[in-house]
Picture 1: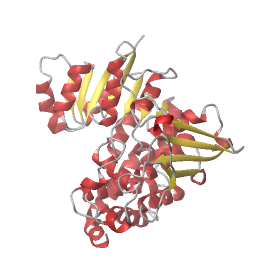
Picture 2: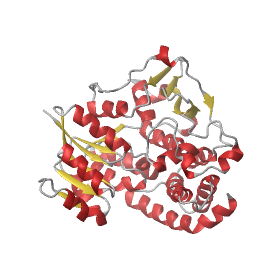
Picture 3: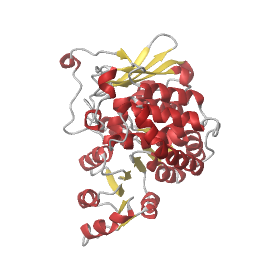
Picture 4: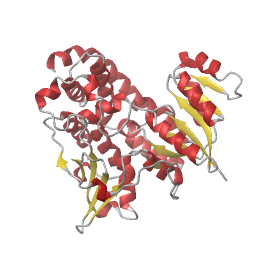
Length: 392
């Protein structure tokens, strides 16, 4: 019997890798719904290839273009928030949550409330509302499977081990395009330079988060919620080959690690397999003899202050991660359009955390509260962008 899969963020890099796997294993899976952002042409093309039960765009204004592109196909479609939630409500065994940013929180949580198995690539769901999200997952019987390569590797490296036996859980980072750059050169970096990731092919926002190491900070918070492990036992190490994705040091001195070529289809296949191993066509097998050597170095929080800010938000707890993520999304968008320099991102995010930490001292009780805090911080951050330009 085939499994029905819904893909949120179907036209992004994770979504495309997912549909590639679904096509490779067409006899094992069928597509329930495909959800995109605003690219009607891309979603229509994908829908015509995958033949989902429903296709939806988050951007309501792109609805007419999607409907026109799918005319005569027989594929029901829609656009806007209601259409996205309709897609989520359709029957599915697995929902791949790959919408980038806080925009993915509401549809991912809607799928969770239906008790679906969630293949989670939207780390912001846990950063913005981690306590409420995991509490609701337990309440509604939803299963959360990590798609991020680091967390998936850690889950596999854990095996049947207990969190209480872990001395340290370490996520690896490629170091991004600025790994060897001097601080002065990083300060003058352009958006194009920041987006030029040396290993992964991702969207511009995620690439820039990787360049600042904010992405690794978000992943630390994600790991805290996924594995129920405190900040003191979480760490980051730079590993430019991106072969080792996560390491677990046990209290007896043993270390287990998750290794794979840098190909997002590997963790996605692990989630889709639900315990079975899916073959990946056109995948590159890991050959350590050919790789030759694996190198590691500490993460430099002086050159990459976003990691320091994220660690502080995790340690502080409460709504600090919610605030941090909202400010970061505004700051990255401002950097992309040239409104602030690269180090203006960390400066703006840190000021937002300082501004709102005394206001929101407890974690959001539910998704609605998390989104309300998110909206307030975004509004403040937009007004603070000029000051970040001056400070940066």
